[in-house]
Length: 486
Image (cartoon, rainbow, N blue to C red; front, side):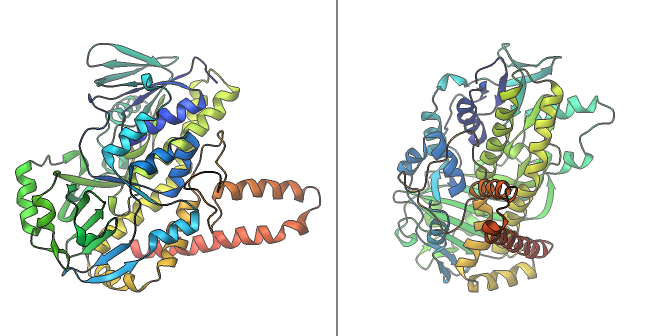
């Protein structure tokens, strides 16, 4: 579906590379502008890819390459501050049973490299292409780069992170409109409640070959992901006073060393301390962690995705997954629009952007709130969170896998113009216990068709099942909202 329509993607991180994959499959011309000289610099720690997002990578033809690059999770351990075991969970096995696809942890730079290496056309990615300005014209956009060159297109997709330049320019453009469509609350929506030591450490036999470990403490917590040849570590510190993300602190290596020293002697297991990981680390850094959701994700010909519009804590690893979900949903909308309107007007684009924005917000709120709740429980930031920390290890693993993560995972979006590989037809994909949401939607369409032909009796059971599933989801959502209110 090649046309004169062209998307300018800003940022070649998780969302930007996913955008190139999806846009190429949709036949939509584009370029991805990355300010850095490298696609996969040795930074950060890990990314965990959930089953619904792996389904998308299966559609794109690179799921196997991702599986080949990582090692699947085994057990999920929860430990107390003294390193003793609170829970030894088979959560990952239950997720595989439910959805037919595993949860896959990868070093972040490895993930980026694999996704880049599997792009059909790598010439769509431009590195060392720092954006200086975005100008909107009557028919498109012009992006001025630091080297003076100009890229022209039909729209901008900002995938440039929590401190997004695309977002700042979009806000400036909107400020000239009366009334300004950007809610005032969006300017202060991102707040910093945490700082985090993260990095890549040595292999630690007491962690298991590929287990995860959450270690509860008072005011901070540890998350360690073991791999056969290394470990990924995160230490989350709750701040005494939060501040606006725009006032971010740029921490130094000395700051990281000083903070690591305060928790170096704290146990991860009965025979391992955090200091054991830190002193032999391959790399480690100290960063601020923001939380928040913008209400308005677009203006004019600029639309945003990923951390540029929603930021959550990494404790349950949903951030990268939600960014890719954004890209899938938006690409579906653009593909549908361009199928019948090859040269869409600004009004056409606004309608597509608005639907994307409105539809994504409830799911993003669930992911952000749930991530924030778990962060506070694990760091025991208040008496109520401390009480929950003691209660949660007694709850059945199956409940979390089915009713909390299960509902979220099964309703993840897929590309609706690309065939979804049939379970059992390829490596790593089986039929799970839970139905995928897109399969349910297709069945619902069939049901509606049969109703129109007098087939109500044959499909009554299906309708009851679907209604019951939504009822359970509503109850779970209600309980979660009550807990997060504290």
